[in-house]
Amino acid sequence: MPIKSDIVQLLNKRFPQLMMDDINLSVNIILNEIGNALQQGRKAEFREFGVFTAKKKSARTARNPKTGTILITPEKISPHFKASVYLNKRLNNQEPAQKFNIKTEAYAHEHVSINL
Image (tube, rainbow, N blue to C red; front, side):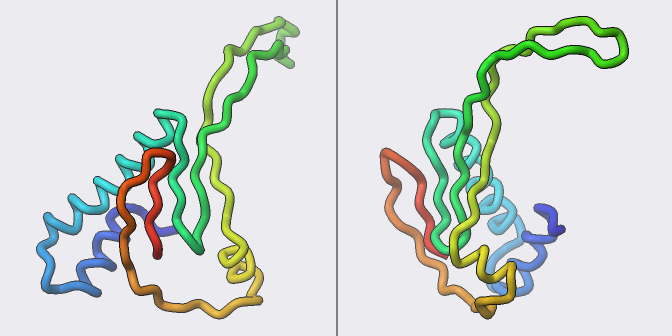
């Protein structure tokens, strides 16, 4: 699984004309905007990749299996990712991997959308 530094290195190899600090800043901005969108109850959509959303989980009662103590877990919000149809086909070898031309769309009020 690639980590953030692997993505930065890959972008540096693909775009050697860009400075490493600029690439690192760009990756951080993208990840921060995904987090900000989720925190504000919006979604982050990446066409042909998938959609990140925040799902609310209701408070519930649980039991500690070791002690039998009943606990109340508070309501919480968790990140959720739904893969696109294209990504699902790609994962199941039904669609060949392709290289994308990267273009960005203007910032939208309802969600963040970046075409990959």
